[in-house]
Image (cartoon, rainbow, N blue to C red; front, side, top):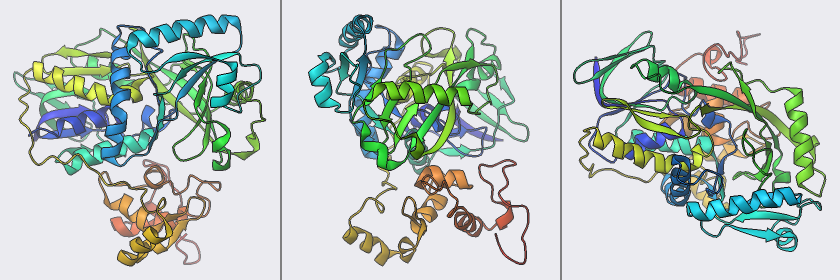
Length: 481
């Protein structure tokens, strides 16, 4: 049975950044993921907002981690070659009651240590956000707010951890954990590993993992949110991330550009019992359309929607992040709802400190390399830079995804680099092949051929997203598609 110093259960953005932080030290680290790829839970489908830190209650762990993580994000994304944009955030008020709420948020932001947060009036609001609704009378402005691609950050974090020696075990659904005097034995249906220290970063399923070691001190439920994504020609309709005044269910329907130039609308917020229900519904999408339209004075072109999707976020019953030891050498990292993405870099450092306090010996890894080369350099390069890529590797000269101008070279890199893409959606998250207007209608067969060839498997065995998500059943008329 393979033995590790630390096992991290959950390969989302929080688990990924914890793994990367621990790979700075001479440790044998294993990341355990129930799904067939990383970033498959809440990380896969969220707003991608780097919150400034004005919303969380002062003194809470959420507030501390949010403000610290937001300040770290630029350095972390630079090191990992991940796109990040400091576009600023607005909480827009449409009434005097909203103004009072916003004034409280500004005061809270100042208390939390958010730099530059302030209340702005209508004229300045229009200067910052020209397309804002004519009904808006004021706003909270947080210039330190930003946007990032959550699954790109997760993939890069785990890839960097693996490049520095960490092991990733996908399709390892934890079924049972046994504690001995000096280690934990972690069982899946078909395999087992040992680890002296364990980090429970299992997202929606962190409650179930905690109960395996006897900790029933908290509960985690699922909150469902639908989104609508508009074509990239709509991305300039908003400069900042535009929020409405938040309530007990979250921060409301937002309008925000993405780092890839699209316009994102949503999410809804509905508590559900089924932690696997990722279906969208007409009522939720209609609500997004109505609320998003209220935020802008120009008509939102919903006809340019290229996809809708649903994300599930974990919310705990404590009202705060749950980051604490469950028992000896076992750390819970649970209830990481918004602003979890923003907080993730700071959570990673906090967990390292907790593990050290539990007795983990941290000896600096002198070979640690924090740098991961960006995976979007080709498509964002100049003509001259692209020609240099093609001179070194002709596969960069073959465009596979026409909507997003993604080359064969980029897809091959995604299949060959840590953590390796093994299905169509894995390639999509790493390269954007299939994320454009046709949503993979043209490029999917070519992506499948590359996956099959690189992994030495049959074309028919390549799936959309693992499991039973078959794309084709068999060959017809001797063709491969």
